[in-house]
Picture (cartoon, helix red, strand yellow):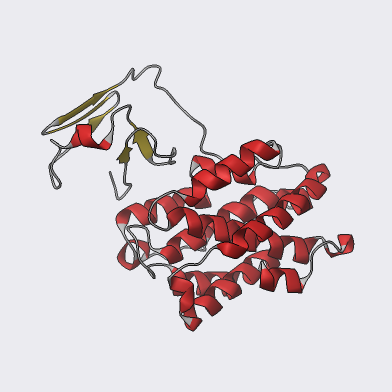
Length: 258
């Protein structure tokens, strides 16, 4: 599909922006062998040992696009960022144990918050493709960072996504990382992410709902959810420090310790 990867997920897996979630359990798909050719068209996915049908005219849908706050929601964003910073303090990632990667991630969060496009693109290039996982941890950090900027920057008067953000991903993206990860990065740049993250970043969601989504996010994949969660927390704090210093609720020490 021109490089776009469609994933099939099973019951219990969080909704993903590039996935079709089945009612079946993983064990029910044992007959679908890896490497099989797949037929894909509206209302149908078919391969040896697997047939999936749905109403092509009225497919079951969900909305993966991030909700955007209004400038009047600034205090809600500040409060959510502070809460995420506290929750994320317990998250460890294998990638960030290496000093160069940790420095690249910290630089990326600061560059995004400061809207320094050149520095952000350089840091993203240092992260993408690095770390373990089908979607490398570095990619997940980039996706979570971009999503948080898109979700929360409007609360600080930022309107349309800036031009520099559209130039964040390099033209050789699919040579630097996996096909599915490249797809998810492109979707994040378009404001489409995993369902638990959309809820965590929605400052209109109730406390119980977003905290439940946070717990679900942490369980997503081997390390994907934890990387997305950490990126959301660090980016949110960096944004608030940069764009709302007059509130005095967040400072650089909080960013470093979040």
